[in-house]
Image (cartoon, rainbow, N blue to C red; front, side):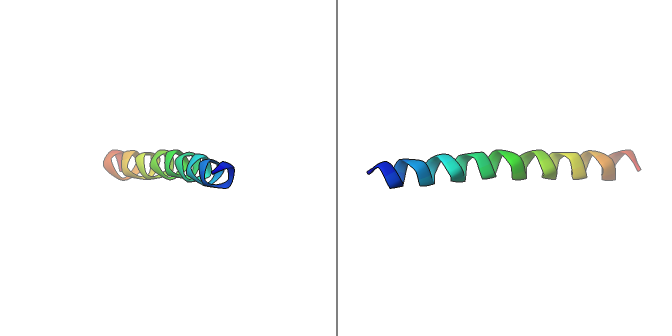
Length: 32
């Protein structure tokens, strides 16, 4: 249970980081 919650939290944080990177890349492509 504890391990599962930790895994979900890590997955959520990774998802946020990936989303930020993708948005930054998309923004750069749109501006250029």
